[in-house]
Length: 119
Image (cartoon, rainbow, N blue to C red):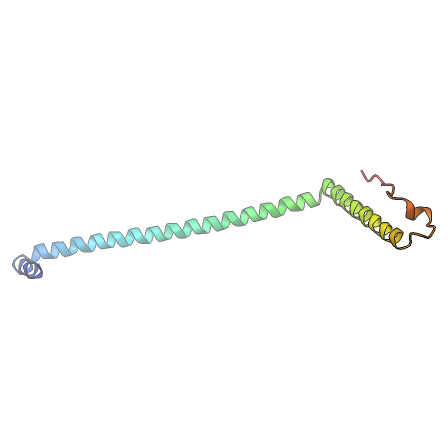
């Protein structure tokens, strides 16, 4: 096949030149499309990264707003109060279990403390 192409090139150099030019144009077009595709992919990656950053920032702001709210403060106070009461009960039970034969002051025998309302 090469011999035939070489022979055609010798007899018709203009046709051979045109074939080479056409092949070159196709290759250049493919390269141009590839470059455009890469540039587009880079732009998409940058846009995705920017959007991701904005989502993270919005999440942080939402958390800050919630932490500054009265609702969060009330929930935090209620949680701390419940944890304290639970730990107090456990402590009283341990004291009562270890010293069961002693007479305790009234505050040790009491099983539930009075809860103050913080609302």
